Length: 395
Image (cartoon, rainbow, N blue to C red; front, side, top):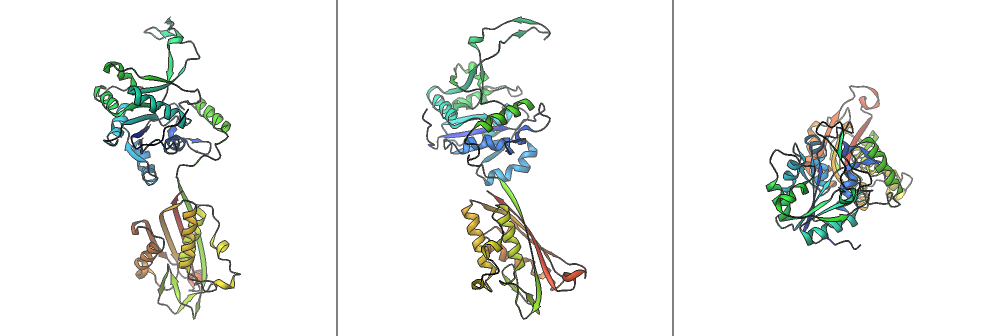
């Protein structure tokens, strides 16, 4: 089946605001094949090339915790409501006025693929609405009002189990939301179609496109993923990663004191193969660590005499080059300098401004501070300076 190409006329809504009471935890962020389940789900849509916008509806806690990272990764976020329908209304407000087609998908269906999504979009464009479904494998019976006995057996051949993504022309979905009762929750939005006199087209799906609702479902989904030959090579949804950096250099006379790429007036400077800038060294190591790319000594070995006295700004430039090659972007830096002398508080802002420029960041995303050792050890005796850095990146 040919997969339709992105035209700018299709947008996706992924609903991930459920509480996951049957799972005992918020299922969207349960680990599946080494990653939070919602990342697999969102990736299926962002990597499909079918959508100009992907909107993710999250509950309040997850929106506050993960929303900024999703936004930086190019996924629009919306606040989930108390019900599925209210979550859909909230997300639909962010759909572009010019969008022709809208796909609505459950965040807990991580095994959906681009072929199914494309088929649903094509059918929705043709018929106004399309719903993926599979034939029932089990006999279904209707229970009586008490729920204690069966009263009838519907003809199984006429029944199907529906899935998502349910796809609609924009005007059809808008009509559904307009007709849906304000306080009533619906298991899916296509329930309202009959009231509008619209019949959704059936798109035959597969049993792999399961909704993870119980702990047993998670085991099944994991087994399906392990079967996928491409699981190890699937392009990853950008996620936040952290790295830690540390450096120490001895203070000696006759050397300039360079911290964060600027010169600090002092009687001593830092001894090193380079200019000894512990701030830039620790930041670079933190950044390299965040993408599992080693440390600066790998790229600037102390045995290389040709780089004797090199400016650490050049080391930072190389680090940025490596980050770019790994498609990583810096989110924030937190730097702590440990020094007894000189007093660095008057230099905080100058160092912060310099680090901001060197790493091409927003000033609000860079923190610089210093502590003393209260006269203890080499640092406390003014014989060395240490720097610790934590870096967060999107990769």
